[in-house]
Image (cartoon, rainbow, N blue to C red; front, side, top):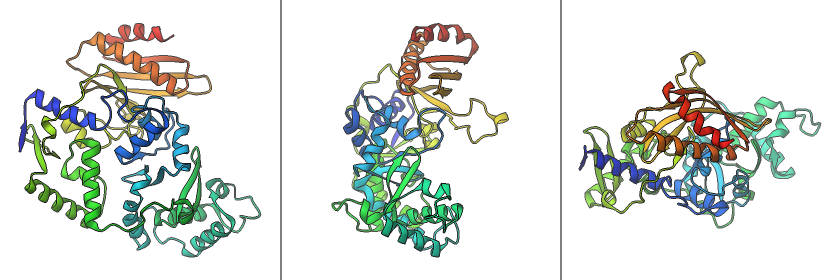
Length: 404
């Protein structure tokens, strides 16, 4: 067991985690479409979210890691069958090569486990499936109109539930997207012939999760290996394999300040790592690095909560505050909104937390990051309303003026 108590040892764990997530190197996965493809393959998933006050989460996560990334590339990867859409710990885009590991959950849903809806309408599901089989792919908007004579035999809400149930059970896949309008087709017509469709054993699934999590996170807690997965047998299999790997010396453990214990591959703690850089990364609240809040707090001492689900009167930082990463430290959060019609990025509030870095260097790096983020939002100008602590207002506003 590695006891991590000294700041320099904790800093090494942070670098290991950030490097594995592709947040230290300038082009960890390459650039453009190929880089986005490799990024999803490495990370195992990119979470999908509908909130659009700024560019959506699945685009934001890739923008943070892939130079030259454009949002249209996600739809292109979906159509090219490089990725598929399904449930990870949440709705996500996943590498097509991992398709077989979506099958246990599909099988569980088909066997009666509830995901969204209890008592699915099997008759309506059969009718929808037959419609798609004979008439071709069905767009989600075809259900929303409810006015087509051809589609007049269904009611919108039950039909939408039935369609989603068929998708969750694996009979249908999302074959294409137009924004958040999905097109569904039969799985056998969507899935490329080369994809492995053999149901994995519980041991194979456990091995896949351990390898994936170590690859994309560098270090992970036992709890984090099965984050938000309710499969008791899978958790037991993961725990057993972790014990075996520890006994074999393939894994080692690190305990942070006498508390949380993290697993990593043997030798990872001493392995060469990329240097820290002086860039600020503006991350999505759903970024793979921050989504496990307990891990985030243990490794980075960063207490983060997305507040869009918190009543407005109880919000501390804003509706959709974005984590700010500088070097190996989260140094604040920024609540903003992209006004797309007038091409304005509004920073409603900027909260900078106490840190050990040169304040001028942090502000300079932050302004550079805001400039790039503004372009990603397709905005031409930036406004800033509030800065905390308030004594930094003049310095930050003056630096932002250089963006025009």
